[in-house]
Length: 537
Image 1: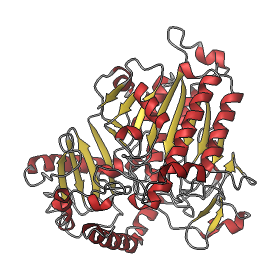
Image 2 (image 1 turned 120 degrees about the vertical axis):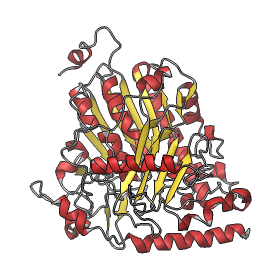
Image 3 (image 1 turned 30 degrees about the vertical axis):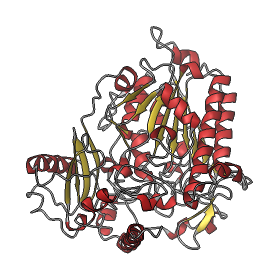
Image 4 (image 1 turned 180 degrees about the horizontal axis):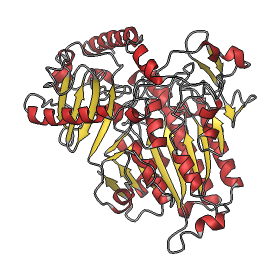
C-alpha cells in the first residue's frame, strides 16, 4: 500500500500523524526540570510546557512489564509476564499470539522503526523486533549493556556483545556512546523517509539505566553535586535532553513536525542507589509504591486542541496502544481483550479519562508476605500475595509491595524526621495497605483499618482480575543461550519450532531463588537507613 492510498482513506480529516514515542529507562519522577529537580532538562521542560503534562500517569515498576504493556495494550496477567523481567538466558519472549502496536500501525500504512532497548525476549528469531512489527531495528536486545562497549552480562562470566542492526549483530560500534548512536540513527531514518507516508518511531533509550556512564563534558555542569552517583546520573539525563532536542530539530528540518505527535515516558521509577530520585513519592523502582509506578510523561504536538496545560486524567501505559492505533486510523474493534483505553480526547481536549481503575499487577511467584493470609483478606483474597490495584481515588496493596521509605534527592541527611517513622516500623508486620491516593499521593496515611468496606471492595476486584490471569511465563535459564555459542554475541539460540509448556513452567517456579537477593537488599536498606538517621551520610 503506497502513501497516497493510506492518506486518501481519510479525506475529511487531517493526514495520519507521525508518531514519535520516546521511552527512557529508570528516570525518576523527580528527575526532570519541571518537577523542581536539580537536573537541567531545558528541552524536555519546553516541550512539556508547550504540550500536555501527564500528572496522573502510571507505568510498571520494572522494565519488561512496562514494555510489554505498551506494545500489547494488555496487563501483565494477560500475557504471562507478571513476574520479574525476561532475563537474557530465559527461553521466553512476548507471547507470539499477541498482535503488537507496530503491527497494527503497519496495517494502517505506517512505516515502523525501533531504535534502542528491546527487553522483550529473543530466544528465537520469531521474538525479534523485526518479527513483531518493526520494519527496522537498531539497538540492544537485553536489559542492560555498557554504553560504550555494548557488553551485557547475565551473571558472572556470562557476558556477550549486544548491539544489533535488524537481525544481524552490529559489530564495529564500540566506543560510540549509545544515546548519541541511537539519536543519530533516528535522524538518519527521518532524513531518508518521505514525510508523505506516516511513520512510527519507537526510540527506547537505555539511558538512564546503569551502568552510570556519560561523556565527561556533560558531567562538568554538575561538579557541585556531592553525591557522585547523582552527578553521573544527572549528566546522563542531560545527554537524553540533548538527544530529544536533536530529534525534535530533525522533525522540523525534514518536514514532519507540524503533523507529528511526540510522546515522552519513563518505563518505571528511579533507583536511588544509582542516582535516581522519585521525591516526594514513596518507594523506588521495583516497588508498587507510587515512586515505582507513577511515571514522568507528557505529549507534545501541534495537533493538540488544548495545549500548555497539566492533565490530571488517569492514564496508564496500556492506553497508548488503543490511543495511537485510533489516531492512526487503524481498527481496534477486532483487538479483543485490550486493557487500555483511547485517552486522546482526555489528553488533547481535556475531557474526562475513560479509565477508572488500574491493575498495577498480581504476582503469584513473588515472595509471599509472612503476615498475609486469607483471613486478613476477609476470605476474599490471600493478602500474602503481592498485588496492587487502583480504583478511583483508592489504592490497595497486598503482600510485600517492596521497599517503602521516602528517599529525598542527594542530601539524604536532611530527611524530614516527621515523615520518616510514619510507616517504617510497622510495615513489616502488615500485608494490606489502603490509601486515598488523590488526597494522599505520598502514601503517608494507611486507611485499611478505618475503611474495611473499601478494602473488601478492592480485594473483590483483585479476585476478579485474578480469575482472568493466564499462567506465569518464567522458565529456567537455558545453557544454550551462552554468547560463546553465538560468536561472542547475544542472540537467538532456539529453533522457531520449539515450544514450551507454560503451565508446567508456572508450577515448577513457584519457589523462586529471588528470596536471598531480596533479603540482602533489605539488609542493605536497613543499614543505609540507620546511617541516614545518624547523620553519617
